[in-house]
Image (cartoon, rainbow, N blue to C red; front, top):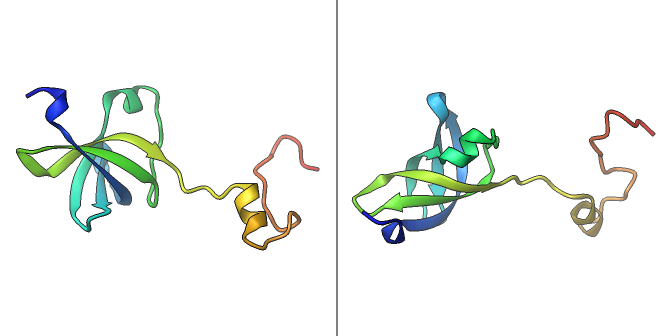
Length: 99
């Protein structure tokens, strides 16, 4: 099967399972078991619960897929300020320069 025949879906990681497997809920409310792609495993890109991912699924087995891209749901300073929180309430993760 060629790579062009894979289906791509957006989803959210709902559960981290042993052996590098993840339970992913797709935007169309289907739940499937997914694993990390080789490059993501090689460069140790971490994925946790709540992260948005792109999953490649074979048309032959719609219950399993491969996570091809992950983006964390980490709020930025600009999104917190635009949501109404002041800059003094935004927690920055600067352990080296506590100022």
